[in-house]
Length: 632
Image 1 (cartoon, rainbow, N blue to C red):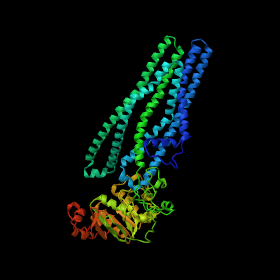
Image 2: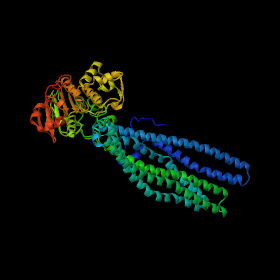
Image 3: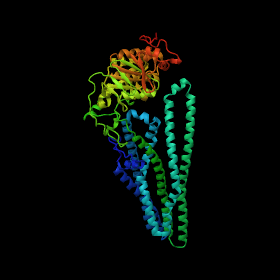
Image 4: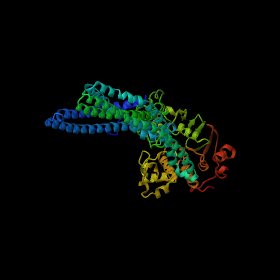
């Protein structure tokens, strides 16, 4: 029976080790694995039936001249061939189902984990590593399950052939029985070496994939600043290092493949030589000699499966180790206490569209909030504190780490000397990492998470854009009229983006909106965040990819559109900060000065150096800007 994919509930993986994870994949489909083992065993053992039938045809029919017996055994050989062909088809079909089920199950738990950890992922794992885990690692892990069918059958077939040969000649049986231990002794050190080489290769492959993704994502910027050749050379160096490591893996693999073929062939020659001498001396019949040849030739198949299985186990263990490393990642404990119906409320909220970088969902999203074995994280123990109500209306946000206090209903700018400090501040204010931030005097972590998500929105400048029409991309959990959509686009100065598209709002956009320029994508993201209309909007460098005139228009329109609602701008652009009602200078993790943009330019040399372009203060940066962006 074919697996029903995708799995509605993939289960809870065992992440205590790579082999335990693989065993969990086996236990997740016991009936199919049992069927594969039975078919694999029947097929492998059936291979040893034909030499016996051939020997009977020779001894009972050919040597005695009994045509009737010869035809009977010949027909039996043909029927056995058809039967083996059917068993082989069913075996291969079942093993394909087993591998596909394992791949789909691994993909499902990984997707659930990625959704669960949400905004934590970029801080803990590179995008290239995630891509490699979701691709080749899943495939290599699922291929290990081949051992549950032909692997089991190979062991049993080897045993059956040894017993049959013992009935013919104990000496021949001993030669065969000693064959596999000899193979293991010769191949074992190579397998251990392969394990080490494969681990290094896999780690470097993830690094190189990340670098390639970074270069492709920033290709236009690199070309603009003349850095394309520099990064191409660096990529080439890393690629050559990976190639050299690949040669190491290939060298070991080639020896394993060669010995897997050569050693059984050597034993075949030795056993046939011994059997021929026994036939000359009359110890065995000619039919038995032919049967011995057939039995030993058949053994090449199970030995090959066992050796290939060992190779797959090495690769699969390396791959499974990377998978469970991702599954063990845990989200920051920012959940706090929740009411009993929080899970239902969580599904109805849309306020975290931007920060999770995936268009919505809580940190434990796709998995329904349950731990999936990835280290036991989730909601265990987070509900110990008392749930406290959120402020009834707009309230101040206060971050004790930096000393920043965000007053109600104002447009506040924060200029950080270190971009990482700005990102960390946004994460704390949006409750994406543990903190002591208060909201109206109430600890933010003591408020139900769905309430926080519905009222506070952190909008990154590079948050993910899913494929769909522009209208679908802009929707923020509720339907908007065309007038509302165009109003949001106007504030983001993105009217030209819509006008340039053939079907305007109904134009299909590909994943990450690659058909749009970096500045156009950034303005679409800003429009999407504005259409959510959160009580508190935290914008992280929202205009870093747009030109100065467009940036000035956005600054003026943003201030007008968000009048009376709390908005925090984390940026160093003088055009944005010039429109903020208050600006805070963040340096070395603390707010060192506050005031208007013009006041800080006048009295804070550090701030002036931070926001001035071309190394010179912008004399008019604090001046007024007209509605179309002309700086006066």
